Each structure stands twice: as structure tokens, then as C-alpha cells.
Length: 272
Length: 63
Ligand SMILES: Cc1ncc(C[n+]2csc(CCOP(=O)(O)OP(=O)(O)O)c2C)c(N)n1
Ligand code: SF4
Ligand code: SF4
Ligand code: SF4
Image (tube, rainbow over all chains, first blue to last red):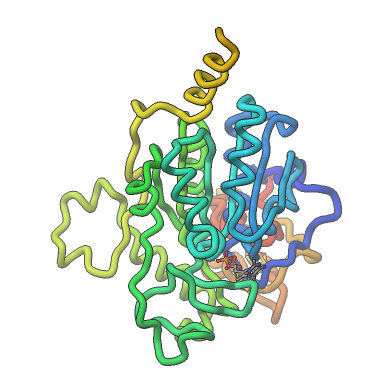
């Protein structure tokens, strides 16, 4: 029954720093359950992040964690994985960290198809620094830097990952907690770059500027607009207006994985 | 259906009310900024409160 999360959390770290209702805590619980399901040896598990509220996540977990520079999580994670391909490497961070300042590292990790699992906590905003718009802030939405509404089109993180070459791409939301661990487990088991986009809520800097009365309204909105990819196949474009697809969106088990390809380079250089 | 024992870790609860709103059986209530459990006998152990609490503040024990 009651889940033992505490055994995975560093002693004395709770309560965490996230605001009341912030979805990052829900994602962290999903990640802990996924690591348990995969029976990951915490001494062989590296959890890497950049900077942001989402990027604070690894600091709570009892594993080999790396809190690095803003946007650079994928680069550090690539270093960890290449240095020790036996490590299970998990990256987590926000939409700002991963697709704005870190957009290049993100797409190139996808392109290489390096074996890691990248959990993007997409709350459509820079939460930590007070709500500036990110590449994922919906068009028309208010941010501290778009007081008249955001004129920019968005990055669809999942589509970006597929286009850039990731070989496992899935999406869910903070309002679908059981799907979070289910998809992260699939991502960890997949050999190659796995991107799990979790649509998340930031009541403090996004919700209150965008007419959500409470975090509960934000969660209800996530529930309302999520359409499982399988169900979407039977729906019309009109019915899908304003919705987003969830579940496994893409998987390719044929594309070579980067560490294996790099091993061939090492073998050649050593004259094997 | 026998009730569950619901444990609230008061130190962790930030009073977001997610658990209260998503409980299908109206077991929980807010007391300003802290969740309370006025109707534990109605709990069906669906785990929604525990899964959705962002703060590791509510646990559903088998009892
Ligand atoms: C080089 C550098 N530029 C800017 C910042 C300021 N900064 C810190 S966190 C952040 C954005 C975080 O947004 P996101 O990754 O979406 O995470 P969230 O806080 O929303 O969880 C920015 C711009 C920084 N720390 N370092
Ligand atoms: S500012 Fe937003 S993202 Fe950061 S902890 Fe608060 S709710 Fe979460
Ligand atoms: S387990 Fe389900 S029924 Fe019981 S208190 Fe939690 S949400 Fe309500
Ligand atoms: S969801 Fe958690 S933090 Fe929010 S009111 Fe319930 S117990 Fe408290």
C-alpha cells in the first residue's frame, strides 16, 4: 500500500523547496517508482540536471547525482555515459533548461541516440527566475516578459526529439501519475535516447498569470486535454483541436546506439 | 469496504488541496493550509491522494 519513497530520498531533505502544488514533486515520485521497478543499483545510476526548479530534482535523490550548468545537463550526461557505459543515466530538467539555453545539447543527444533517459518537466515557463516565457509557452499566454500575450509559436518537445533522432519518445502529464513511471520504465529499458515529456504545472509563475484559479484547475486542464495516442488515431482534426497526445509516440529499435558505435572507434584506434 | 489508515505528514504538507479535490470519495478536507481526514471510513484505497500529492505528505496504509 503506502509507497516507501523515503528510502530513495537523502535524509533530512523533505519538505522540498518546490511551491505548493508544483508538479515537479509528482514527477519525482514517478521517477522513484520507475527506478524501483527497474531495480536500479543507485551506485550505478547517474541522475543529471542543469539549472531551474525542475533541475533541483536530483539533489533529493540518493543516487549518483550531478547538478550542472544551465542547459548543459545532456552534455554532462553524455560525458558520464561515455566514461562508463555501464551506468544508467537519467537526465531531468525543465523546458527552459532543455529547449532554450540547452536546446542544442538536447537535439544533439537525440541525434547521437546515446543510451540515456531524459525526463523533460514541461511547465511552459521559466519558473525559477520568475516566469519569463520559454520556447514552450503557448502562443497568446502571459509570462512576465510577454505581458500582452506571447506572440511566439511553440516547440513541441516530443516532435523536436523525434525529428532530432531520439529513438523512444513518450508524453504524459503530472495529472497522470501512474503513466509517469510506466513510461520512464520503458525509457530506461530502451537502448538509446529516450525522451519522456511530462506536461507539468507551475501555479506560481504561470497559473496565476493565465487565469487558473488554482493548481487544481491546472491539473484538470491537463486531464481534459490529454488524448492517448491510440485513441487519437480514431479522432478527427476538429476533435483534436487544443488536445495533445499521450503515451508512447515513437520507438525505433534499429538505429545504432552511440556508446556502441564509439566502442568501435576505440577498438579501431587500439588496433583490435 | 473497510477503511484505510491515512497518514498525513504535517511537516511536508503545503496545503495545495490537490488530494482533497481528486479524492473520489470526499474523504479529505482542508483545514486552511493543512489537509485533514474527517471520513477515513469512506476511503476505497484508490491511492489518488498519495500518487498526486507533490509533497510526500499523505500515505494510505492498509488497515
Ligand atoms: C547561464 C545562465 N543563464 C540564465 C540563468 C537563469 N536561470 C536559472 S533557471 C532558468 C530557467 C529555468 O526554467 P526551466 O528549465 O523551465 O525550469 P523551471 O524553473 O520552470 O522548473 C534561468 C533562465 C542561469 N542560472 N544561468
Ligand atoms: S516557481 Fe513554479 S516551477 Fe518553481 S517551484 Fe514554484 S511552482 Fe514549481
Ligand atoms: S485513497 Fe482514494 S479514496 Fe482514499 S483518501 Fe485517497 S483519494 Fe480518497
Ligand atoms: S496534496 Fe499533499 S501537500 Fe497538497 S494538501 Fe494534500 S497532503 Fe497536503
